[in-house]
Length: 145
Ligand SMILES: [Zn+2]
Image: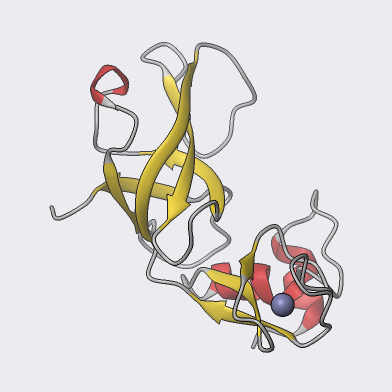
């Protein structure tokens, strides 16, 4: 676990709090941690301290496989310069439904696939940038490559 000071320094523009600290600490270790209820087993994201299904407070950040399917996507032609976004070519913005649970979605981008080749229900998996540091967005690639 990364110390809290390091966590705050890694995401200067993000409000890191008790509910999402484990999520961001996981990103620094290139692990996607999603809150799961220990009582009913439901996953939820973004992180909250209470299970939205049964209201239990026994939720724990739990690693997921990072595999899923594109649920929604769009291609941005302009936006903030971050994550190496290439707006001239089109920057994909996707909601990926993770395989752990129907409706469990995280947002991110798709790399190594031309924006025009992205389709709904396309199988994707997480990929992490080389080196250390704070990933600013979740990156997915076509699964099985
Ligand atoms: Zn629950």
